[in-house]
Image (cartoon, rainbow, N blue to C red; front, top):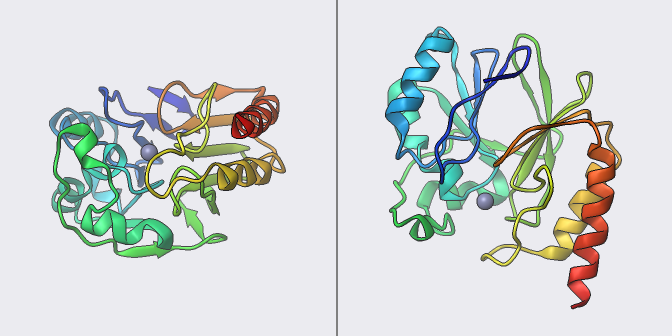
Length: 217
Ligand SMILES: [Zn+2]
């Protein structure tokens, strides 16, 4: 489903995360790999697969990274993840694969990302924002000119990512949300659930309050 000119949200099946294909050149997240066959078919219909050079993981969890190895083998692309989650992506330790009744595959992250790095495609320039809280190396990708935020499991259309798993930290999540509240965001493209257009500033403020309140309980 096209959600913005040049950005496709692949038709994922639970428990896969949202997988985004951007300009037919960049993939954001890989899903569990369980439904890789269907994803492969869909991607093949959407673009010339030779142009897909990079897959960025928003964080290390298995529902976002389980399919990495299959994409690497199929497209010979590079995998990128933030330095804070790189090891968990590579070894599977901390990927929570067991929550999905699966085992992680050992694989190599080709590019370690840091905050402030840029990821470019023909029509988009995404800045890597480090937004720890859900995991230490969680990132969001921000397209300043188009006001698009790809938020991984940091922020969803009406809630935030859980912070009770290993490496999670509610205080960090609140700080990450505060950093996001400084941005101009029109389109929210989350790691699960529906994308959201408009009202993102309000949502972030609500989530900062909600997360801060729950901390007191
Ligand atoms: Zn997650």
